[in-house]
Structures are given as structure tokens and as C-alpha cells.
Image (cartoon, rainbow, N blue to C red):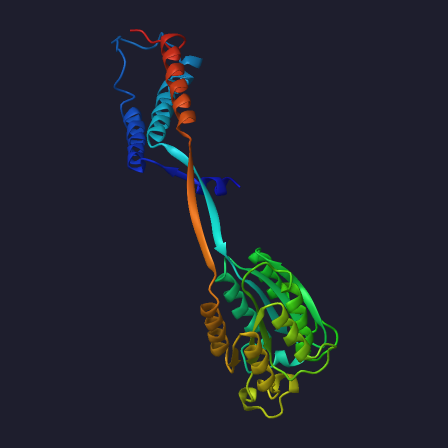
Length: 332
């Protein structure tokens, strides 16, 4: 907590701070010259003197310490420490986005590294980080669909939910593209944003679910939602192993015609991603196509903090004078 506070401290005249290097020199000078100060008296013998200690001797360095503290405080005060407050005002129009993930069993295929689903999660997270002004939500589907995160500007919450996505989150397997799209549109239908988009990622042919894709497509058109479809996967067998398990082979195909039709009919675009790089390229293309009109104005406010250092320094000077003129007064 204290470290966070110091992160907001700045100095108006930081070029004065090197004066603090005088402090170690003054301390060394005081120590080196301690035996050369004061009056001396020569006597023939010291036998009549007994070693004595006094509280005044113990507190003899106190005035010098107070002077050092006063000088340190005054140098810091002259450098004008300030606490910085930053305020950001956002204006303009953002875009409402729903990321619609296929989490069926085939998304664990390892033609992407480490697998299709993990690659999709990583790249979707990067996409969220690039869209600071947008409201973003998450829908997942297999044979059923589920809203994992409603549209929100809390991007940390969105990214946390993306990281939690895993195959088997929904008990029944399948690829209900219609249900996933319909749920995504439902998240956006009451949105007041001028632009509403769904990014639907899938690696399979539509089967299962209760809402046909054509019904979901009509809902998207009705509510002015653009759908960007991304077909994920290849027909390659990882590591050339023909005996790999079905979930790892990547031999499942997706319905290009269906995904192209949904994208075209709603004003979006269709992309195919045969590698992690091409999947990232699909998101980059969408990012360029759907630009938010957001302007962020940053205001910096400063609160002066020099006064406590001035008061502390003056207090040290006054206390030193009082000690030198009273209880620690020296003769001659």
C-alpha cells in the first residue's frame, strides 16, 4: 500500500535533490573534527581526575543530528514533492462485442498448439486488450449455449472468464451453432451501441441444439448484429500419427457454406484459420474493420506536499537552538 502511494509522488524541482549528497559529507566532517574542537587546559597530572559520565555528554550529538534533519527536510521541501492524481475522461462511441466460443470435444484437437481451444483463448484475450473502449461479453456453446459473461467494460473480468473456459464446461457434446449465435444476439438485442458484433469461432458442422442456424441468422439481422465467423482447424494429423485419438486428429471439418452465408447475410465477414497465426490474423482483420470512435483525455492534478517538510525542518531548528542555549549550553 505504501509502495503504491510512493508511485504517485513526483518532484517539481528534482534537480535540487543532489544537494542531499552534502549530508554524508557533513556527517563525516563532524566525526573527523570531533577531537579538534573545544578549549584545552594543560595540567601536570590527571591522577586527581576520575572518569565521569554525564547525560549531557550522551546528548552532546543531538543538536548536530537535529541540524542534519532540518537541512534534509528543507532540501526535500525546496524540491517540491507533489502527489499526482490522474483522471481519464472517455468520450465517443464504443462497440458492443460478444465472443462466441465453440467448446465441443473437437476443440481439443492438437493441430493448434497446445490445442484449438487454448489457442483461441489466448488470441481472444489479446483482442480484448486491444479494445479498451468496447463492451465485451462471452458466450460458449457445444450442444447447448451459455452466457459466461454479459457485455461489460470490465475487461479484467472478461479475460478471467476467457481463461476459465474449458472443454466439458457444458455436459453434453455437440456443435449447436444456431443456439450459440442466438444466445449471443440475445446479449446484444437491447444494446444502445450503434455497432454490435458477434465473433463466432467453431470447428464443426452444426448439430444438436434447439435453434436452427437460419433462425439465429434472422435474429441477428433483425437486431442489427454483424456476425464474423471463424472456421478453425485443418485436416492434418498431428505429428503424422494416423492412430491418434479422434479428439486429437483435427479431421473434423466445418461447414464453410453455412458460416459464409451467416457472415454475408449479417454484414460481417468469414475467415478460415488453419494455424494459430492465421487465427490471430483473423482477429487483427476484425480489429481493423471494426474501429471504435473513442477519445480519451487525461488530466493530471497535483497536491503539494512540501509544507510538512518545512514545518518539520523549522521544528528541528528551533529545538536545536533551545538545547544549545539551555541544557546543552557550552562554556566558553
